[in-house]
Image (tube, rainbow, N blue to C red):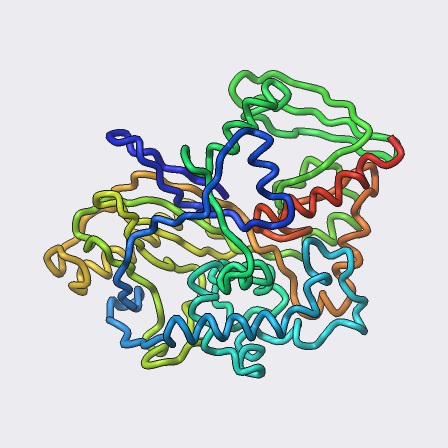
Length: 411
């Protein structure tokens, strides 16, 4: 999810959600369409990483492999996973039948890395995007590949570029899209009722602010939200749709910016269990947890990332961040007086909501993804988003490029 912070004094921007875009397929063409210039230059500040167990405040004497060793492992990792790319990305169209699923996709990711001697790659996989699934060592490999997979590996090894808008932050693209769509978008609105048939759909929408009711009649419906129970409740699901979508579990992700002078500038406070010392690369915290506090380069602003489980709320995420902050402060890890407490000053906060949709290995073996894709086109309804594709935006756009012709077929 894109989150761009704008400094009121200087106008400087900082992206505390999505920080860059993978140069997948025709990704840059989308920016060109809206006259948004992009750059591959990065200006991230140099940071000092301090490993701390946020549960206790104890410093963790963890020594990660050298960056060279980590990148070498990622290159080997990419070679191992290449044969499975079309099974999972950009969607599950080619996911194998249960009796043909490679066993490596279903074993815990920590076991997978150990099997192929790829443990040196674990720290960089986790710290970039792998942490989105929580304790990735215990998650089935196929789902970690959806949070850090082929294109991320290509990006880290120099085989694929990353880019950002040259001005306005990543939000610049979505501002341009909103302007282009104009009044065709019903903002601050919720579906309150629907009727979906094999010949078309009828959707009733209410505006939160005005109470205005809008009736939408269409021949096709595209659903782009995560299909949680609450999100799909108004969509007139039949029993097969309901039972299939209810099998998903999710991580809830939250990001924010905090402004407290007790954080040490240029520091990256990273949460690891004490048992990760001295060099156990496959040991991570369980969610819900605060992943890190990271200096942004803007005065006292630090980026915070919180990984929750399926039920974690925004209030609980903020409470957890406050608790971790207090632990660091009282343990003397920050520049304030030990045993002191203070409130986190939130300059920005964003609930990314349910992400990294996944199911149990048993469900995968029972044909879950074949059942899931039976929903595509049924009752004139099509589905996109992370649960049906992947959470990386430019890869999701590639999925949509293939999906839209299917939606338009027969109109």
